[in-house]
Length: 246
Image 1: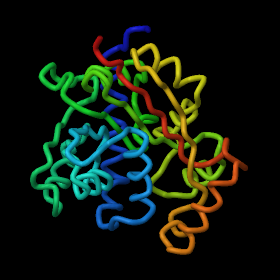
Image 2 (image 1 turned 90 degrees about the vertical axis):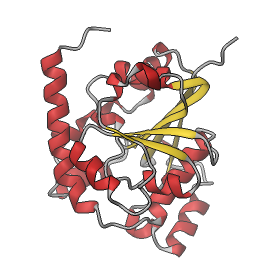
Image 3 (image 1 turned 90 degrees about the horizontal axis):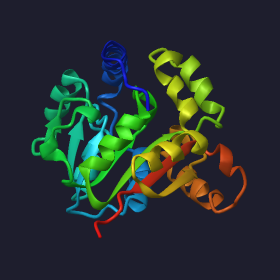
Image 4 (image 1 turned 180 degrees about the vertical axis):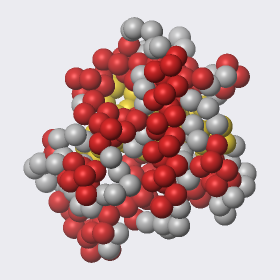
């Protein structure tokens, strides 16, 4: 793997911080929803997360998923590049006892290594500067046998491109990393980081305004059992495991 040049690394992180500090502020007051809870359901199932497990959420932002995990009894900790977002998250009800870390994943201090049952993220991995470095860091942070899992946009789903260009607070530059969220690009990186049992699960069908209705959620759940259109389903859940110590 080629070495990352510090100026490029810092510039990338500054751009991502600016992007999210603008777009995330507009979603602060959005309540928990069936759409968000479903992502947490699939994540907990795939990463075998149980109440009491110590979990690091990468790119936690304003805590949309962090707070749901905490409500379910997960000993979740949040990590994000933006001090501004972490400050606002710390002020939200339910976040008082959640440890928050304000640094890049790859800069996690040694005392955090090998301490988590799982390292996870929701729609954050396609924003990182260096996938190799991020997966290597995540692999160091989990305990032997721990899991690393990320839910990402599926680049084969055309609705993402419509969303990016139709949503004022979104732009293509910070989102273009979604093109790498495919098995040929992701699986080698995950395996090079020492992860085993690498898998991809694609799920979902409908946008939030449908899924957040009870009938819409039921229809989506029923249709997902039909093996049609799987390659273009909107959510890609990549998961791997650090080998247990022998």
